[in-house]
Length: 155
Ligand SMILES: [Zn+2]
Image (tube, rainbow, N blue to C red; front, side, top):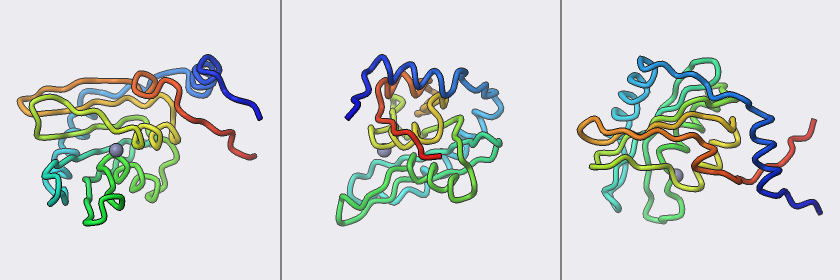
């Protein structure tokens, strides 16, 4: 069994997608607004922690999602994965941008599971988290998931 080292994973990531996509400020604004609108539809009666997300696929199409909680907590899904899965269901096979909105003082980053799911659809997605008072923070997936799990896709 071959174990992928951190150096190899980094090299593979750089090899598979050499450049960060350029997302315009207009596109970020639209994604942020979609994420905020989704946040308002969050179903979070247990945590009361509403999250909205919006993604842009490689073809420019967008999809959004909110967190949906469940009395069986393990059945809860995050806003980010909801948005990604919706984009894929609509036909996307790459994700180039992820916007997250939370009504919090500081921007919130995606959880580990969502980072891994995002990595499946492109290693260099741009991520911007938006919070109250226009606060935002930007990350690359490489920063948030430096040695994420990868598996070669069969031909
Ligand atoms: Zn998550």
